[in-house]
Amino acid sequence: MKDRPTHSLPSFSHYLTKVFLFRPALERLSDARQQPEVSPQAVFLALFYGFVSRLSSFKQLEADLAEPSLQRWLGVEEAFGDDVLRYSLCGFEVESLERMLVEVNRPA
Image (tube, rainbow, N blue to C red; front, side):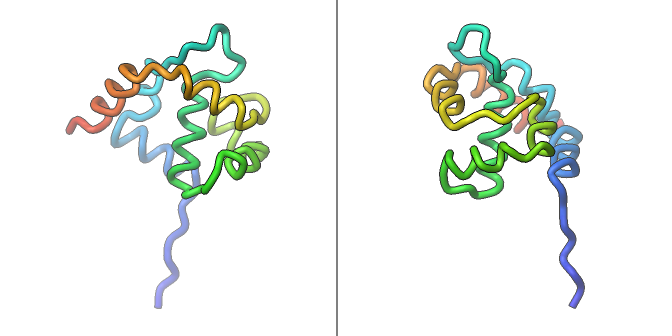
């Protein structure tokens, strides 16, 4: 039996950007926070990572955010907590998220 291939977060990210133009589409995301230390794009990417990784809670995601490699992937300088995730989501601009999701799902 052959070994199953393993994939890394950078290769998955590269695939998303190449096939769906994922990273460029994130630029239009916004939330209601004024001058946030953590961008809405980084919050969305963190939540997307949690979804893809099948994490069961924000606390589990917060623990993963302590990893420097994940911080680099998100484009943040230091870890942030579940309170940032919750606060950002409360004011997330749904219209920009909908536009981004439609954009990445359009065939090229």
